[in-house]
Length: 72
Image 1 (cartoon, rainbow, N blue to C red):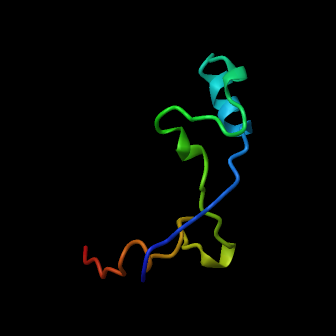
Image 2 (cartoon, one colour; image 1 turned 30 degrees about the vertical axis):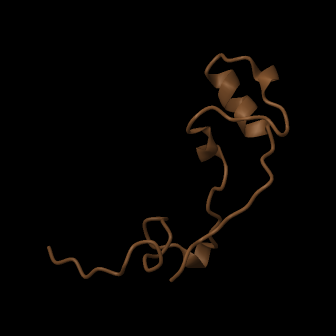
């Protein structure tokens, strides 16, 4: 289906919240600053409509994962 791209303004708020949770200095996070490794997972979160979710609450398969007919 092609490459998915997502852009977002990185507000320092989520990084400050995680830093406080981990007892880190929150003053180091400012706009335009660098995040520690893996902290980008706080951003670029998917936004799916309720009608696009399957019964388990995850997005309906088909784009990232192919539709698979699993036999039990």
